[in-house]
Image 1 (cartoon, one colour):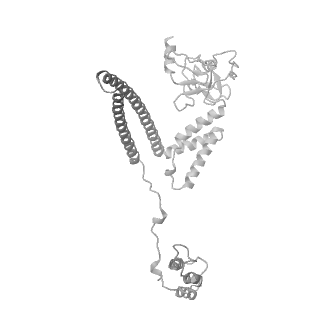
Image 2 (image 1 turned 60 degrees about the vertical axis):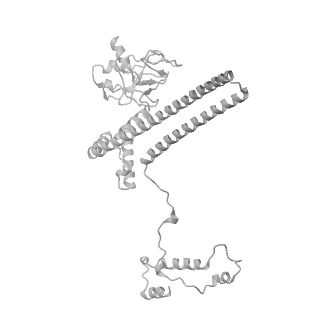
Image 3 (image 1 turned 180 degrees about the vertical axis):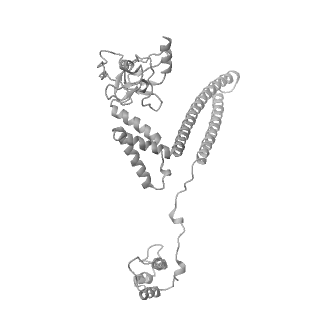
Length: 380
């Protein structure tokens, strides 16, 4: 019985079943589904864990062991476990077949060990296998986008990873696929370890941020409770002061009460102002701390960019023979002219566009003659 108690201590907080939560702290969780208790003295760990690090074990009243054909109606304590070849067996069959050492699987004849069995998380064992394979591959192939010279190479790497994952999930060329994984591990051992450290640092930073947010939330709740308590004490103090003044003063009771309430309001406003200043200071410090870890990214304003106006390639004259602006220039009253329009700006923009492409070479295959090029330059 002492060994059984120790086993329960090891399992504390490790496995959670959908029928309820098993615990060794003496409290029994009520549930509408029957509790499945282990009938073996062996601790079966592993399985797919959730965010809290616990394994949610699949449970169904239709469960049946494919080896001994025992079901949950005949054996309410039936518990099925999954092997490394993803075949289910009950704990009794596992103890009977694998207690003396490694033995072949009764379904696929693959050699298995007793401790290789894990709790079942998903109803479909194909999903169970895919999740396990993808988690394993994610640890081996953990390169990032910045580890590649271009996007095309990174996409080829992702395609290779998906090809390896598909082969392992569907048992296609498993020896060759395992050889590819081993070769990749050997060639990129340093980079794999570096990326693992980066992921651990990122996860550690996230945990620290969550802890800081939790502490700030608790601090705000504590300050709120303290403010409520202070308000209650001040209200009681104000009431006692009013009673004492009414007992000892000979003035009008309404004036005494009004004066006491005015003093209480003044103290309350001063306390509110102080707490607001302290809260603003804390928010400013948090904002500065966040800004110190963020790379500045100022917005881009196109109108402030440096650009070439080509003013050294042309000279703007006072008058041009421009038939399109004759009517506008003759309009002295400004009836045909929009607000802010100047014909000199139109001439300046036209000349700038005309000379902007003079320094560009001609397109290949055109081969303009030197005579035509000289004529064009002379006309400008």
